[in-house]
Length: 438
Image 1 (cartoon, rainbow, N blue to C red):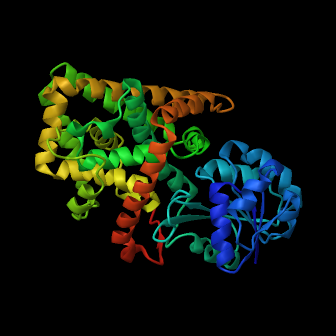
Image 2: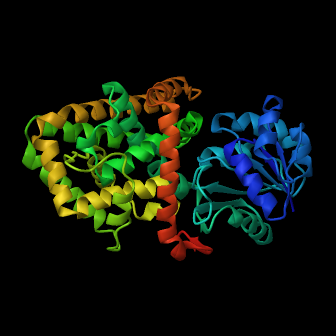
Image 3: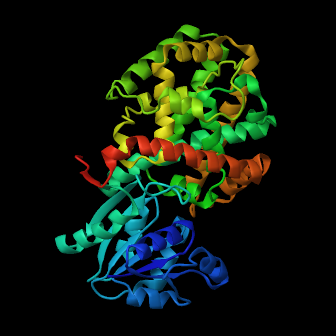
């Protein structure tokens, strides 16, 4: 089988390297002005870098589109006439309803569609990670051959419908990005660098800071495309915003009993779905510190309480979403679980949220940032062409504040964190194949 990749960005090149190493003939195409960059990325491999995307399409038994979601329609229309009969076509985008609709609209008959989603980023070691596979139009034999290729992209293969995939990803990626990006924007709005403040550092805060820095090291078009094109995202983003705003306002207004009861009900409902084993343990939580934890003051953890409340209000079971969970989502759910199930930590965070006026400025900044991002996402969803300008602008302003050096350091350290977390769960996932029961 000869494999072609249209779009040799971060994930396109990573995929090409994996398949080349497995012995497949792989060819890649990107825009001419990116030729030098692509050659550098794929140096030392046998991947053929072609200047003609049509030639890649003509010669491929399996053709993968690895372009930004907003560019997918143009790319598919451009190369569809060249795709040979009975080729398998798929994509590496994260929003599958849009991708599959685009492929179905443009592809002629006698072409198959089997697509996948690598549930990890380009800096993450694929070993131990999950790949979701979706069969759209293929014979059993063709589908099995496609799965054989896709299974090389991770250790855990999940077969799932497009609808269920996008519904889960709206939580595991869109809402995860919303929460952590809001943390970074809150820091920017306050002019505050948390790693310089030893009072508010603890295990949870260290991990939150690392993942926030990690997300600002990604490319904004990926996160914008996830939010704007996923038909399940709008309702979930609106609920997370509503949960954070309502909890903060109730705390400010002194409605302590109401907040306490609301969050205990939410936590009981959400975490009753757990198998009883913590996703994150004390050793992992304490290992990744950004500053000394001596004399650390409690944090209200409004970001995590908002997530717990939103899951409850949406009647969502986040543990089932682990089927399409990214490392960042697993950490987000693990942090929320760790907070709720540790009685001392839970009590201290709620007392801080309800009674500590010294911390209220941090919560106000976070609440404002959540609303800013929710508005930006809503406007992008409603824009006729899903214009990402406002999203990019907000993202880049925060990234500039955080600085490349801090972001790179956070990404490296979060890579270590994810590697250790993945190792802990790898035995149960390694080389397994799971079919979504729904």
